[in-house]
Length: 237
Image 1 (spheres, rainbow, N blue to C red):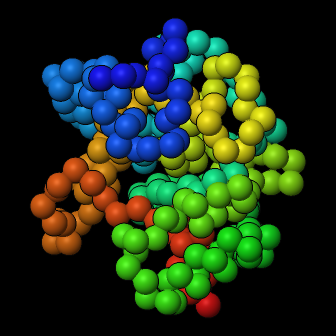
Image 2: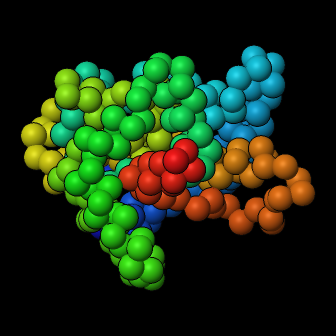
């Protein structure tokens, strides 16, 4: 297998093809490592959340922050560096609930967020209203090169502490992010990326009331942030 990697052992073109990234992760980490990390993270995250009386997702975010602070080369990302914030961002219901909690705690006006994001929200809404087969829609391409709804005028994320996994796993170690096409995005450097989405899916499954649970199959539905904002607006009319 030809790996698009560098001296740090990370997948350089991680935003071009998710299947390629998946193959890279499976090549880099053994099945045993991946399964062991998944089981440990779910158990440890849920346990610490109970002890500290906080949401399991926030515990998991804290773990990821520690991993990046301790186990990888220094990040070039900094406040105001928003090159990778001009693309589609998807998240699960659990991650969206975390964003709503953050907005409530910090007094973020979601109506204002929607107003400044009308360009991309309109695009997504038109596709939804057309009842198109969602599997045939390239959602990320629909909003690419447009700012994330939660990107402030100062180039900072308004919900940074509760940003989704989609955002947390796009990082740069080389300081060459000037292009918004994200060809310099680097992924696959930490084991947590191989299991992060499944851990979040399991946390959401375990937090769902038993009467509403379905058999866990390792994933949860995801939607673009613009789609979640449309649903929020409809619910709060």
